[in-house]
Length: 477
Image 1 (cartoon, rainbow, N blue to C red):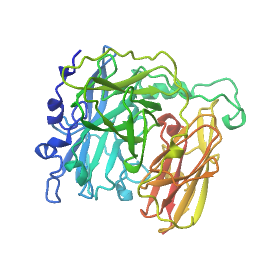
Image 2: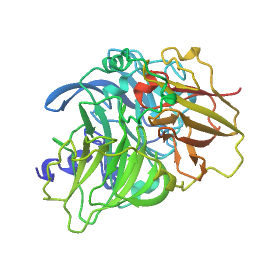
Image 3: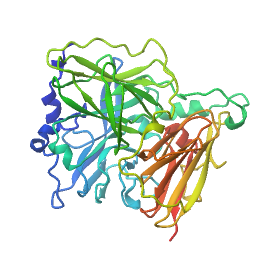
Image 4: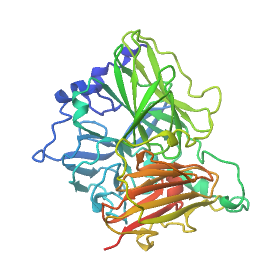
């Protein structure tokens, strides 16, 4: 297969359509930066679509503009004027993961806003902050596992002027088994087991073995091939939109410079492999060698052999077939690389006003996941009391204490936080909105209470969230 199978300009002309790729050299021509308060709202539709996966037709969901463009692109601090139409047969709600919307536009049913019923719509209008690589996904039930998600890229002015090709890589996991059946299997009665935090259980990286692992809606049997230029610079905007899978991002023969985490700049570090937990994003800059060639950008499933990815290829380069399973399993994600990161713009230096401890717990016999012994009722969140209460202007620390042997990617809505301690070791780490808390580890993050309302904090493994690993952060009036 030659890289000319999919010409780059074809992908670029479709914006985020299909493979979700574009080159910002052509941004002005494509209208990617033509956003103004007077412009008509962008229409986004939750729809059913069909993919070919493992040689079979798969009915999945998606977030598309009427012209087939997948997801959204905007510009920093421009109005986020979006009409979301629900073309599905059941209610939905979409969360703008990584943005700081007003509380009533955050997309969590029963917490911040109601669901959008079939054939109805909701209008969103708020400043697009911050710039960076973000994404959007359903927060209604298990819909995210049906691929109801998409990239959400917010550009700053430097994106338009820099001579850098930008490539979006969207990783996801997929099963032909309906999500509710998967969840029922996880909840099925098991032999009597002690709570995970008390049994010294062996670490378990994956609750679900999926049928396929996707990169830009494709597997390695028919990978996405992106045309790049010899000696060119490429900014990889990499998103883990999986419902239950952490990855190692492997650049193969290339060495990359990590420049942003969860959309926010970090002081660059160089490596050829990067951990990427569920819901996290990384921006990695790579240089294509003068001699050109083809270069796989792979996601290696944690503690497993499965892999997926795309290829960067110069004109005429041949693509070497890469199997969907590697030769040896990977290990577990750790925080070794996380501990090396530091934000370009950290929080201002000031004392922490309050610290809340969130103990992450599980009971595999019942398949319950808790925070501080509380199983959150996701079906009726209005009955839940907030575990974290803050006041406007406070510096707040959240200490995640994982009492289970399984890692949990913890996400805070409506804010960015700084990683300030890992296993008792203080640091001035990266700014993020999602942090991986490995098994039996403790991670502390700090944020400024500057976006009032009632906010979700939860594990981003969708099965753990559905089973109760969530809490509320409430601003006092």
